[in-house]
Length: 147
Image (cartoon, rainbow, N blue to C red):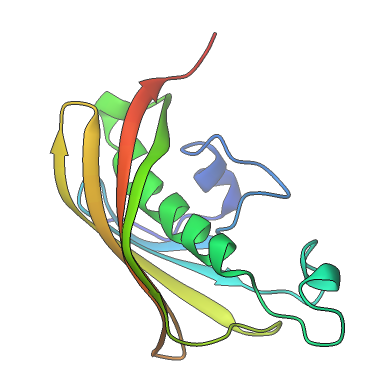
Protein backbone atom coordinates (compact mmCIF):
# COMPACT_ATOMS: atom_id res chain seq x y z
CA UNK A 1 0.00 0.00 0.00
CA UNK A 2 1.11 3.52 -0.71
CA UNK A 3 -0.28 7.01 -0.39
CA UNK A 4 -0.98 9.81 -0.11
CA UNK A 5 -0.69 11.08 -3.66
CA UNK A 6 -1.32 14.76 -4.40
CA UNK A 7 -2.75 16.14 -7.65
CA UNK A 8 0.61 16.23 -9.42
CA UNK A 9 1.21 12.56 -8.55
CA UNK A 10 -2.33 11.72 -9.73
CA UNK A 11 -1.64 13.57 -13.00
CA UNK A 12 1.43 11.37 -13.48
CA UNK A 13 -0.96 8.37 -13.56
CA UNK A 14 -4.16 9.74 -15.16
CA UNK A 15 -4.45 11.70 -18.40
CA UNK A 16 -7.28 13.87 -16.96
CA UNK A 17 -6.65 17.59 -16.37
CA UNK A 18 -8.55 20.62 -15.09
CA UNK A 19 -11.42 21.13 -15.16
CA UNK A 20 -12.14 17.41 -15.49
CA UNK A 21 -9.70 15.91 -12.98
CA UNK A 22 -12.09 15.09 -10.13
CA UNK A 23 -9.66 13.73 -7.52
CA UNK A 24 -7.85 15.97 -5.04
CA UNK A 25 -5.81 13.30 -3.27
CA UNK A 26 -5.30 9.54 -3.19
CA UNK A 27 -5.03 8.50 0.44
CA UNK A 28 -4.49 4.77 -0.09
CA UNK A 29 -3.26 2.87 -3.13
CA UNK A 30 -2.74 -0.80 -3.73
CA UNK A 31 -1.91 -0.91 -7.48
CA UNK A 32 -4.14 -3.29 -9.37
CA UNK A 33 -6.39 -3.85 -6.38
CA UNK A 34 -7.75 -0.92 -4.37
CA UNK A 35 -7.77 2.88 -4.14
CA UNK A 36 -9.18 5.37 -1.64
CA UNK A 37 -9.33 8.99 -2.78
CA UNK A 38 -11.02 12.23 -1.83
CA UNK A 39 -12.72 15.08 -3.67
CA UNK A 40 -13.77 18.32 -1.97
CA UNK A 41 -16.76 19.85 -3.73
CA UNK A 42 -15.74 23.50 -3.77
CA UNK A 43 -18.12 26.47 -3.94
CA UNK A 44 -16.55 27.54 -7.25
CA UNK A 45 -16.90 24.25 -9.17
CA UNK A 46 -17.53 24.97 -12.86
CA UNK A 47 -20.80 23.01 -12.97
CA UNK A 48 -22.56 24.40 -9.88
CA UNK A 49 -23.93 27.69 -11.31
CA UNK A 50 -26.09 25.68 -13.70
CA UNK A 51 -26.80 22.60 -11.52
CA UNK A 52 -28.92 24.14 -10.04
CA UNK A 53 -29.20 27.95 -9.68
CA UNK A 54 -29.88 28.67 -6.01
CA UNK A 55 -29.66 24.95 -5.13
CA UNK A 56 -26.16 23.72 -6.07
CA UNK A 57 -25.76 19.93 -6.23
CA UNK A 58 -22.89 17.86 -7.62
CA UNK A 59 -24.27 16.04 -10.69
CA UNK A 60 -24.59 12.29 -10.28
CA UNK A 61 -22.75 11.69 -13.52
CA UNK A 62 -19.73 13.56 -12.13
CA UNK A 63 -19.81 11.47 -8.95
CA UNK A 64 -19.70 8.37 -11.17
CA UNK A 65 -16.83 9.90 -13.15
CA UNK A 66 -14.94 10.60 -9.91
CA UNK A 67 -15.40 6.93 -8.91
CA UNK A 68 -14.14 5.89 -12.36
CA UNK A 69 -11.07 8.11 -12.02
CA UNK A 70 -10.44 6.52 -8.63
CA UNK A 71 -10.58 3.06 -10.22
CA UNK A 72 -8.39 4.19 -13.10
CA UNK A 73 -5.67 5.11 -10.60
CA UNK A 74 -5.73 1.50 -9.34
CA UNK A 75 -5.42 0.11 -12.87
CA UNK A 76 -3.01 2.62 -14.39
CA UNK A 77 -0.65 2.67 -11.40
CA UNK A 78 0.39 -0.89 -12.25
CA UNK A 79 3.68 -0.77 -14.11
CA UNK A 80 2.36 -2.86 -17.04
CA UNK A 81 -0.46 -0.33 -17.61
CA UNK A 82 1.53 2.91 -17.31
CA UNK A 83 0.75 5.31 -20.14
CA UNK A 84 -2.45 3.51 -21.16
CA UNK A 85 -5.96 4.93 -21.17
CA UNK A 86 -8.83 3.39 -19.16
CA UNK A 87 -12.19 3.89 -20.88
CA UNK A 88 -15.71 3.17 -19.64
CA UNK A 89 -17.03 -0.13 -21.01
CA UNK A 90 -20.16 -0.18 -18.85
CA UNK A 91 -21.77 0.98 -15.64
CA UNK A 92 -23.98 -1.44 -13.71
CA UNK A 93 -26.16 -1.25 -10.62
CA UNK A 94 -25.50 2.43 -9.94
CA UNK A 95 -27.61 3.80 -7.10
CA UNK A 96 -27.63 7.34 -5.78
CA UNK A 97 -28.32 7.59 -2.06
CA UNK A 98 -27.80 11.24 -1.10
CA UNK A 99 -27.21 14.69 -2.56
CA UNK A 100 -23.69 16.13 -2.47
CA UNK A 101 -23.39 19.88 -1.96
CA UNK A 102 -20.58 22.46 -1.98
CA UNK A 103 -18.35 22.21 1.07
CA UNK A 104 -18.80 18.45 1.36
CA UNK A 105 -16.00 16.00 0.75
CA UNK A 106 -16.46 12.75 -1.12
CA UNK A 107 -14.46 9.74 0.00
CA UNK A 108 -14.14 7.50 -3.04
CA UNK A 109 -13.26 3.82 -2.85
CA UNK A 110 -12.76 1.45 -5.75
CA UNK A 111 -11.90 -2.22 -5.38
CA UNK A 112 -10.96 -4.01 -8.59
CA UNK A 113 -12.63 -7.40 -8.95
CA UNK A 114 -11.28 -8.63 -12.23
CA UNK A 115 -8.87 -7.76 -15.01
CA UNK A 116 -8.72 -10.13 -17.97
CA UNK A 117 -6.69 -8.85 -20.84
CA UNK A 118 -7.71 -5.27 -21.54
CA UNK A 119 -11.14 -5.51 -19.82
CA UNK A 120 -11.85 -5.22 -16.11
CA UNK A 121 -14.45 -4.55 -13.47
CA UNK A 122 -14.46 -2.80 -10.11
CA UNK A 123 -16.90 -2.04 -7.32
CA UNK A 124 -16.93 1.63 -6.39
CA UNK A 125 -18.63 3.83 -3.83
CA UNK A 126 -18.55 7.44 -2.73
CA UNK A 127 -19.50 8.62 0.76
CA UNK A 128 -19.76 11.89 2.65
CA UNK A 129 -18.88 11.66 6.36
CA UNK A 130 -19.45 7.89 6.22
CA UNK A 131 -22.89 8.23 4.58
CA UNK A 132 -23.17 6.50 1.21
CA UNK A 133 -23.80 8.92 -1.67
CA UNK A 134 -23.46 6.59 -4.68
CA UNK A 135 -22.31 3.08 -5.47
CA UNK A 136 -21.97 0.95 -8.58
CA UNK A 137 -20.00 -1.51 -10.64
CA UNK A 138 -17.72 0.03 -13.25
CA UNK A 139 -16.51 -1.85 -16.32
CA UNK A 140 -13.48 -0.54 -18.18
CA UNK A 141 -11.30 -1.28 -21.17
CA UNK A 142 -7.62 -0.45 -21.43
CA UNK A 143 -6.21 0.95 -24.63
CA UNK A 144 -2.98 2.57 -25.73
CA UNK A 145 -2.80 6.35 -25.67
CA UNK A 146 -2.74 7.86 -29.16
CA UNK A 147 0.63 9.11 -30.30
